[in-house]
Structure formats: C-alpha cells, structure tokens
Image (cartoon, rainbow, N blue to C red; front, side):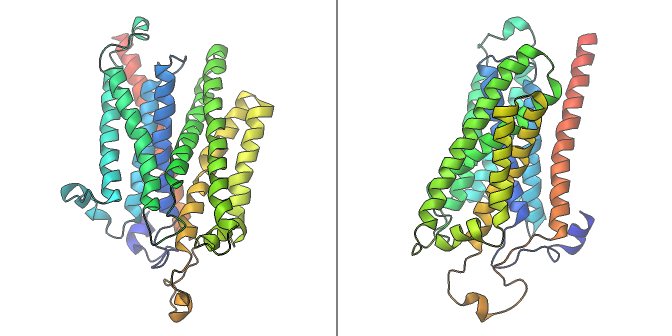
Length: 359
C-alpha cells in the first residue's frame, strides 16, 4: 500500500488501451458478494431457517465489510482517488457509475437500519412476528441487493464500443455470480460457527441448494454467451471469446474457473461433510473472481481499429494486460481488509450482546 501511494499507477500492468485490471475485477466481485450475502441471509431469516435469526446482525456485518472492501478496491484504482466525493457532490444520474455509487450508499444505510431494528427482535416469541419495520426494510434491502449486481452487468452491457460487453446476458450473469459467491461466503461462515446437527442439516441444505443452483445457472448463461460468439468466426465478439477459451490466459477459464467449479460440486454432492462444505464454499468464493476477469479483460483486449497496436509502441499502449506483483499484493491487502473488518465487527457484536445480557 505504501508503494501504491508513493508511485501512483506507475507500477501497475494496465494502461491506455486496457485501463481496468485486477482491482476493478475485485471491486465487482466484492460488491457482488455483499449483495449475495444479503439476499441469501435475509432469505433464510424470512423463511425462518434456524441459525439465521441469531446471526442476522453478523450477516449484515459480512455484507457491509464486503461492500466496503469493494469500494476500497475501486477507490485505489482511481487515478485521482481523492476526488471520489464528486460522484456525490456533483452527480450525473445519466451515468451508470453514479447510479451504482448512490445505490451502494442506500444499501449501506438500509443494512444499518436492519441492524438496528433487529436489536428489537431478541425474544424467541418475536421470531415469527412479522410486524414492525424490520421485514419491510429487509425487502427493500433485497430489492437493492438484487439491483446493483445487475447494474454492474448493465454497466458493461450499455457500452456499444465494446461488442463483447454489449450483451443483454451480462446483467443476469453478474447477478447470478453475485448470489453464488455471496452464498459461498455465507456457507463458509456457517461451517465455522455451527455445531448443532439440526441447524447444520436445515440451514446447510438451504445454502447448498442456492449455491449449486447459482453455479448451474451461471454456467448455462456463460455457455450461451460464449458459444454464440465462439461459433461465429465472423462476429464482432469472436476474438474476445476465443481469447477467453484458448488465449494466453486460457488457464484462468479452464483451470481456475471451471476447475474450481468441478472440485466444489464434487465436494458438495459427493463428499458431503462439514469440512468439505467449507472447502467447497471457500473455493467458489475465491475462484469466482475469474468470472469477472473473463468478462472484464477480453472486452478491452481487442483493438476496435485494425493496426492500432502496430501504429504506436509504448508500454502503456498495449492490449496485453498482465497484473504486476504490486497489483497482487494490494489485492491480498483488500481481501485481508474485508476479512479483518468482518471478523472484528462480529467480535464487537458478540461482546456487546454478552455485556447486554449480563447487565
């Protein structure tokens, strides 16, 4: 982080032709996790699944920590990071960026309200009581949590200049990826805290079904998106799809993405033990960032003007993006920051609740 602030963007791998790299992919991944954790967690609460009621505030903390980490990631990627306030002070609501930024703030505020209202639902008799403002605010939060991952896909889909991004399937893929990775994070959290067999059976069945369903829907959408482009050599999206499947970074798609999915499905469907669930959910939560990269990078790596790559040469004028060690170290910091923020937030809540009970 010191090197990042000392050198600006001189030690990064992106440039003029590929201006968005690993940190932008992490941004979309973390905000997707935030939305997915909220959707799955609140869904479990509303459907009265055991384990969700007593952990709803922890779920809010995990979701908020993921969203803050995503905002940190995009903030670090900005060339003028300390001008971020302009999106709030002088917004342009015709911009998808502005729309997303304001959605995140409304979402954070909604989570804070849900957190506060959940404090009034401490008694067991309140569990089935749907009166009050808690559940209505949860439904409003669900609307936001479903909207902004879809907006992230729309952010790319409305770019006419990038044919690979200009697709109506991207909002669906981004939303599905968000729910899948968010559910994986929540399942991983549950494997760390739950020992009760009844909770394990009921809650895990719910989480595993959502996780497997999300994976299968995403794979179906991904197949539809890439197959049409890859099997049409004359299409404008053929080169980008070919880059994903057999380009220099083919291993990101085949080994990291699909390999992680295969291993995770095996652990979820065949092994079916608590440690296996934890490992599978961790793999999905980490490797699904490759789904973002496989959309983000190929869409920028194809020149729209033939011969542009050969017309000028400079290390920043390249369509080949390779993340530098600095980018990876900062990415590890962002992930560690998210985990630390969630950990200490949950610790603080537990101490607060213990002190409240003692008093």
